[in-house]
Image (tube, rainbow, N blue to C red):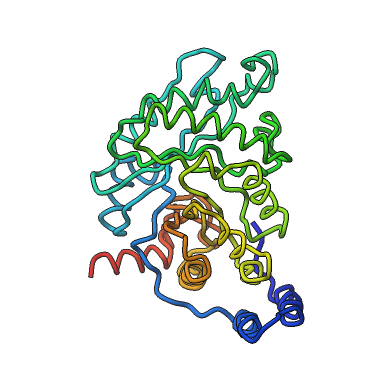
Length: 340
């Protein structure tokens, strides 16, 4: 995840100022050049990536209760990861005991978005693919059974089909997604048909790419290719990830705001956050209000993430395992706001 580089920003702002075609464009670019102000975070639109997979932070029940009661948030994003522990071989029964525990632990005032992603080791052998198609195998072996199991669960608001398909990693390579938004949309179409048939009351959420504002314009172009391939016909929500700042990529002509403004679907930011326990509040107060102003179709922002067992100065977690600095400034702000 890239860091914000002020010198790089100034170079892009110069370009924006040069190409701006009217007074409002000039004013917009100048405001970004001067710095985006911090504003109060709208907690009504804020949720949490809360995977509850590290018992050192407490039981899943205690973690979800903390998100709800202590921080005052109302929705979480949880993970069903397809790996060899969940399914050791093709056709074997899924071990969804951990997911069962998670969903049984979510209090009544939280809703859960289930994201499904990953590949077990046996998927590296094409002989194990259904009809020679790895994406059909994902739908058949993981997605369909998960939707059948949780499609009527009262805490589940929807299913997110995959995570960051454009990332160059093994699981995306196996499914052929890294360089093909069209193949991802084909998988989304098949997944959507299953979800809408088995769980018609639940939302279909498309996969977010790597941060849409970073590696510009590569990640944005994958989003454009998803749109061109018809992704909007197969989802109820368009998901994006946003890390770093790169505000100029939001407002530049043909940039993120223009792209999202042309979508017919509402936007959920299913991951966004900053590293460092003393950096998270400033990031949230600067970035999230800016994004909601420039992209008014944003309905939800899921913070990444509730817990992470990494050092306080580099953690994305609102909670870490340090005895001296166990919670971030954003955690403290949310806690104080929820309990005042």
